[in-house]
Image (cartoon, rainbow, N blue to C red):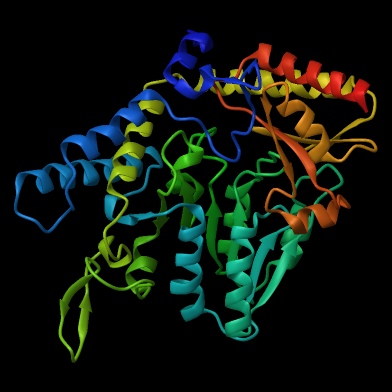
Length: 406
């Protein structure tokens, strides 16, 4: 049965706002998604009714908080089909998860002459940590180029992979163009030459069904706020044998087994990588987001999102002077475009005056924009399942209105 989008929208209080005298048209979901009421309720319930630290106390509130905190870990483990809960490490989000792998795995396993394979589509969070690792270890970064359509060039990737490749780090979905990368194929190609794989799943978790065992990746990083959960919480899935060999990245409380002034022994997984008081409320609320998503017909919602993107692309193509960036084989979530002789920020400002929220600039993907020759960046419209065809129509009308102004 097809979902009733207008009914679902009632779960998201922010969507009912009036902005600049207009009903909010929120099309900045690749930056962050709105939160359903159950997620807001979970945050409120923790702080109001069970606010306590987790794991070590002997009182009732701590026991309740610990139970909810670890139950959320199990929900995320099942959501991405990780083999065990201890392979799911809480982080602040994708950026921290990638940095954890960079500093705990990369700094200790890479050496001069080893190669790190990235792609032109990567977010800065999946570029800069590896630059730091390369600078410290003498490893070399290689980059998979794009086809003219905006897909990753798999023939070039095959040529770049060699016995010197030690790590493949690639996004599942491009945050800037919405390109869905063939990560399963790339992971298999990397494994064939003995390379470890990391997937940046930030843009995938809110749109696709993620199965880390089917992908056969070694690491998978994600952010809660891009999958209808809170900000400041996310996670890292890791292959158990790798996580067990990796040293802690941050040290302090919780991640230790015993401490003396002479030596310290470290805790077991996943706590070895979770120093200090975690984002307890965030984790619990992210578990509520998973509950919310699993209660929906996600296949039907994905079809709805696809229809929104088709309508958007068709509408943009009909507007003189508008150019869509990229024609990938598979796209999800986002469309980037530019308008001739109009700065993206100027266009977005006029759209904001009509209550339409978009994102402009380089989208934390400056190397991609350089490769595309887009010094000013693009305008990005990104959808979620709660968006409607009426909102796409409003955006297209707003662009036409802005075009008349310019």
